[in-house]
Image (cartoon, rainbow, N blue to C red):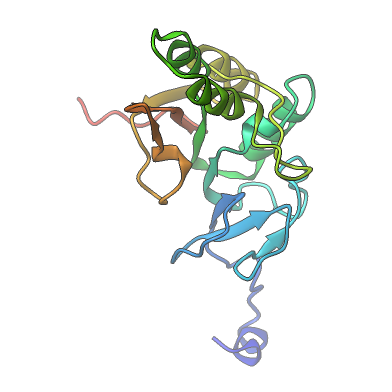
Length: 197
């Protein structure tokens, strides 16, 4: 539809827009998804921090995907605020797909007998970040219990742990020493409708 057609029909192109599917921290394009990243890139649609989502209207996003993003936020202010903001921008039936380093898994791997110092160093980097630039530092370690607590405080009534999301080829499916190292969770803005009677 051209802008002229919009003007003639009296429609507001913003109000009439379909809800977004927002990939926070993404770099590679995927049909149907828009990318928000703190750093510019050839496929980044919105530049900004996930701690400031004011550029997105209330209930304007159908799905949010955040893979290995939330661990970069402090757990006192940034993480609770960001989850509340995601809750705000999601449509009433919207979903949040989260992937973070699984602290319990990483601790178990670290403590395994026979793990080499190089393996332990890699596990430590997964816990604290690769520290390759100013944004690559982790500020919180998350377990399913901790994450559910933060999600509940932000207004999400339910969360489900899944093995993998399978939406993007990224760290959410990474294995180390044969183990999936990510905690993958789906949180719904409202309780999912049951298919039962």
